[in-house]
Image (cartoon, rainbow, N blue to C red; front, side, top):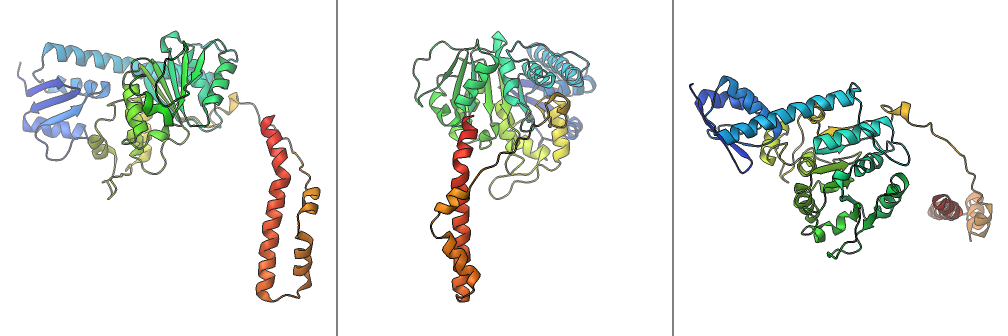
Length: 384
């Protein structure tokens, strides 16, 4: 059988040497390839392997048996994963059950099920939909333990309370130091991004599942926390990102985030920029040319799901509004100078600048008094 060139897998890159017209067709198919390249190198992913096998049906390339078998296995995995993703998300296939003390809602079970299937996924549900519960569902699968939760500095205890609320049999431990120490036996380790770098030599290979809460914290690829996150995530079998706002300013932040959750799926950064973004600006940042198409691609590849409160509204309880009146008369009475300032303003006896200053002083004192009046009631509400 005639071959049109050769292909080999070396260190997670597919290297292709082919006849010129085949190279031209490959560039049409893979928009991530740079212009003018004669030798083609593509970062491996199951999606890329499936496309390459499809190309080789028409343009056979010489390939060793080991690489051929690997490519075929990746294609089968990609097909099965894609089909199940669509079936579960559409409701045509029942999502697996998760045993929690408080039963998860259907859409929460679906997300947890899909995340276990995909290995790495971004859940970008709107605020209030319950992303943390979807992660806790995954903790109930013994295969995912020990798991690691990485969150903002002020949230580890909140995660510990939520896990105790929904899965009280799971043992949790919050990392207390930035330097490693002997960990107690536990099912879920909880830490903040600020401590992650100090543990980057200990946690890789030790945790099976990593949950990155507010995953937009990994948008800067050269930061210590991002490098530590990649090291830990690379050795974990499952990776989950949670955020209603996965990017802050530039579309290429998606690459930094998703390259932790699904290493290599978007190719190299240069391939990603070539395929999806406009040219980089002077600061090395780039915007995605067509956000709608890119979002559709992420969902189609099972890399991201996003549901709004409206999407899942049928499963959420209605809002309960409880008006709470805050008395403030006593505070205003005790606020020195308010009466005198008001009298001076009303008297119109001062000059223009004096009147303006008096009005500004009165406004400041009223705001201060209002804040003082509300403070204790807000504190009591938070405590409740």
